[in-house]
Image 1: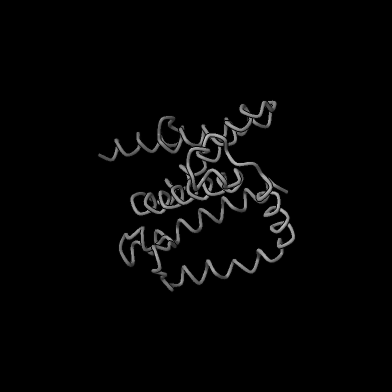
Image 2 (image 1 turned 90 degrees about the vertical axis):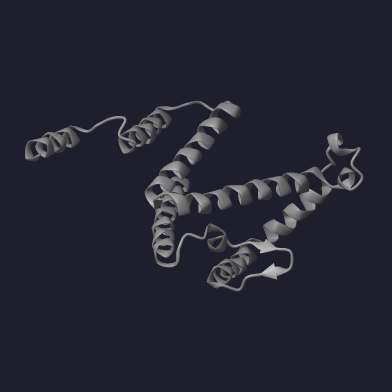
Length: 185
């Protein structure tokens, strides 16, 4: 089921990239406006805000789990390395990890919106697929999991597709087209 969800997310991400590309062509390249963000008390009530707010009721389905993990987070010990910092010395470590994760996700998402305004959606999808693949490989080695035949097949497909897309590897029909083009010239 996880592979199905990841595949669905990949296709939806590609579709969103195409949609953003069309919006940028129509209204100009403004990645900061395309990104839903809050600066101080300034809240933009554009359609992107509404689309983000529409997803919030979905969290009600996980309300029991969220409450359970709030309790778990609150019981975690503070980070000893921050004992010299007065404000952070009493904050449970899991809340700090959550804040760090949220910050890095914001940096990632804002970078994706900036990248989308600079290159085509196909390039963005390729970069994001490589990032996800790199995270997968890192977690396999970091957690000491075995690298199975399926991982090798996935590795070959991801890097093969990347090399073909970047024209490092030329396909036979590309060479035929190039020869035919030269004959016409």
